[in-house]
Length: 96
Image (cartoon, rainbow, N blue to C red):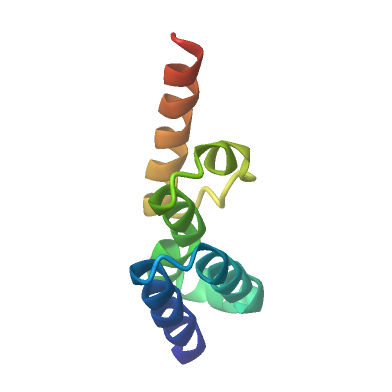
């Protein structure tokens, strides 16, 4: 948990300084380092962490990357909201 917090704080600092590359690399690395057992055992806490890569890309206006991102685990409620947002964004971009 502390490791994820450290990555999150570094990402947040990079966001506030406009350091896009550092923010993206840091948040993506955080997710790869979270053990699978932690993701399921602490799902309510892990939920917020899984949406962060999309949030970082949204902060920098990287909408194509948000749309191209792989599906996120459906067991998380915050992640589910981001999935709905992505569907809405796709529809708006198509003009439907």
